[in-house]
Image 1: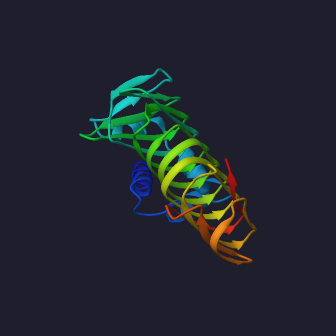
Image 2: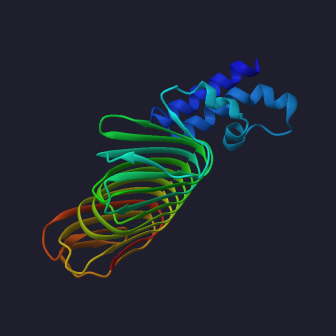
Length: 265
């Protein structure tokens, strides 16, 4: 029975990692899986986090043999890749771009790395991750719980985050972010496209004074602030649209419960 339940939990977490279900659906499945068992052994039903915490270290033996284990914070180097995919259940992430031809990964705890032709895939259940990489690298980051720090990256970034703050400095290129909970503070020198969807938390976007961009901002319950003078401005209580300096990068922000500020860097 225990092994069967463990396998079911792993399948649910695998579906979450692959994006087949979201965190809320994963939580419901885990709670439904453990409801009868937890009523016998625990005064309260399993929460999503309790379910994750009960997964033992033996999980590592069930993972694909092609993965390389990182069991300490010792740095591991990899050849330059076009893209990095990082999936993390719990822990903070720091990603920094530098002038280099290698990718260096440091992991505080258990993690796994798999190399494809043009992609470096990193998966972890818990623990902090620190990555230095070439500035012109594309990123896909999916995390359940933890803060994310980005700096000096010139590439496309995709983020799906359930809980945690996101900060970025000296960024270029584009970003697409879907965020459930947490504040966002991003600093861009230039951009071709910024698209941010958030449920709750404040969003701050810092742009250079001579940026060329078209902005569109919507809030459900929150204030909108913009330090730039806008051309073709359309403004309502929960909506702002216009052009900063001249047509250029597209910026779209939708925040359900939180403020949005577009400031000068």
